[in-house]
Length: 401
Image (cartoon, rainbow, N blue to C red; front, top):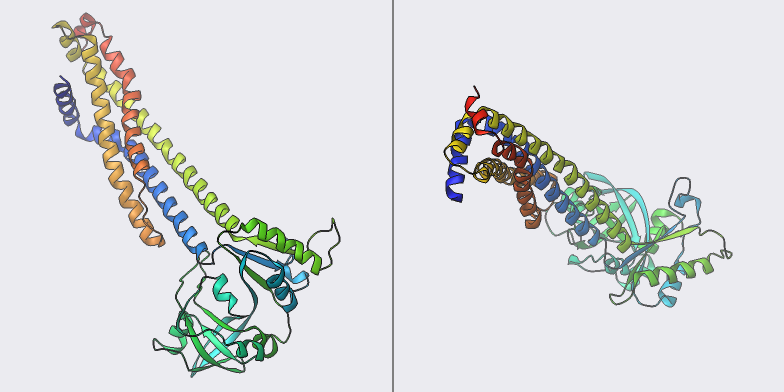
């Protein structure tokens, strides 16, 4: 019985192919939009998580000054080496504490030159950033304490200035300083903010301060907590220690900030997920519009086939049989639209993720939900026209011209 009803529905759809295509267009657009938006959003969220994970695990960042308009770090007193040493000695549950000082400088090799952010730090920096050495070595203790100009460079610096060969042992000029390249960092690629993480030159902190910066300031302190230690506890301990060292009175506002990267990751990915959900919800409105279109066309179909309905009722067809015929026809239209929408949505999402360079992350649950919702649209919006057809008076229907 059901097979016969489906066959009749397909015959009715084939009689008006163009109208049927235009009818399901709203469902196609709705399903495709939902799947494309959610898939792109999931890929973007995954990329943000991966990029933020590259910044280091269980990472905290202490910065002079508070975040916000008019509260820039430049207005607060910078950190110094004693602050770093105090953190290493007094903070519990930490893997590493790395000083970071930065300044842009021209890096020259042969006839080529580039303006690059130079970072002064020590070997704890590689621990906090989860950054491995591809070739070469880390800084020696004598290089860190003695202020020798040794450099570890990123792959972008190597490619742009030194070519693809092993750069270890070569000498580059950082501003007016001759600096021996002792190591090459493994590649990290671009961050979520569009910056090239591999366009970097690292120097021992004392060499950077004495020969490039001309001061002993430390602009940021990176803190890496152990895996079994709460970053919130380390953050609170670091804030308490810095308040003591900077002689901040009880109740007074901090002139520094300690950021927990774990919280930033959660906030960023949460925001991305909310945006993806909102876009998916907006796209879902198209499904409702498509459903209204199906209902409208089915009402027209009932009007056009009034005599046919009257004949069916007159020769013994039951009301529920007539109702099921039109209901199945509306559902089949929606299912066709849902199937085409799924394929179109996945295709658009694949093309968009390739263009945006984010992972193509298909969520089967969303695909099935969108397809099931398209069928539900056919049932809901097809019910009223089907009910109207079933309730036609056979005599009045036979008289209809």
